Image 1 (cartoon, rainbow, N blue to C red):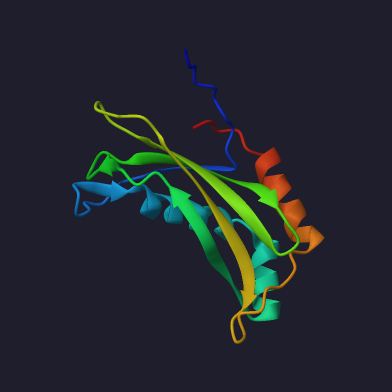
Image 2: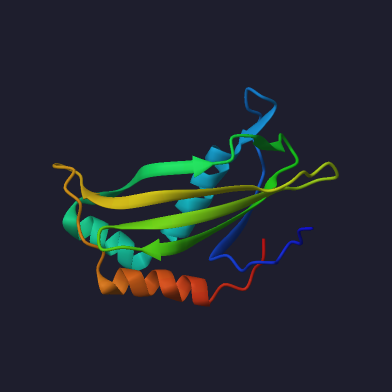
Length: 144
């Protein structure tokens, strides 16, 4: 017997889903939208990327492959940074379809690196960026 446990996410976003080829928007697209919204809140990360002429790159991503939101119904997307390593970090996602016929949530995880734009060389994640991830998570109030 399973029970759902409400979880606080660093960012919770309600999005309208576009119509995809299978009748709904894939979870991977919704994950990307949530990931971009969370990273947009990271001022220190943006400063680092400008100073280092670097970019955020998704190295690995695994997300439930089912379309989770039909056009017009939308979804609630919760994302958090869940692990930080010296040159990469992981984000997790939970996507809940909205509407009367909402199904089970989709889950996913990705690994992100910061890489110099010209060379692709990974750059270390400094303490102030790590602290920013922690501050976002600690200030989270929304459940998904």
